[in-house]
Image (cartoon, rainbow, N blue to C red; front, top):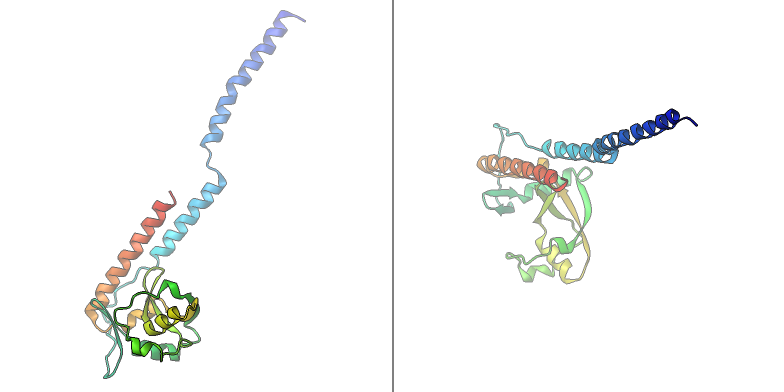
Length: 199
């Protein structure tokens, strides 16, 4: 075998070895398909969250309060529970009804009338309102929830109203305007949190 032929083989091997790191570097720079899909899903969730922002209606008419109506006050946000119940009765087929864990809502209620707890019917669904994106608050049925907790019952039926449905039952325009700002701020915070959490 000639010396020239041997040197040509060695040179060919050296070129191959030098080229390999470049291919390796290219592979490192490429983004895995799973990562691309994950980022795409994250952006979709963020966009979906931001789509839930509310637009103020300057023609908003506060929910009227008739004599004897039950109200749920939460700071300046006062909801007419009587009108909410009437709304659910008329739209019960399209209002979400599901089982919720009693432990999630059975707290130390400051307005509980102990003498009234034993007389309530826990088969009657309570009402939950979405006060911030994905977070629901008990607005009607605290005595039923308290009784269920004392009886050791795990779950209870609840009507769940999203913000688009329950906001119409605010009893003042000032509260409505403030609530839209409050809600949109929560939507923005949730979108930022999801982006940070998935980094």
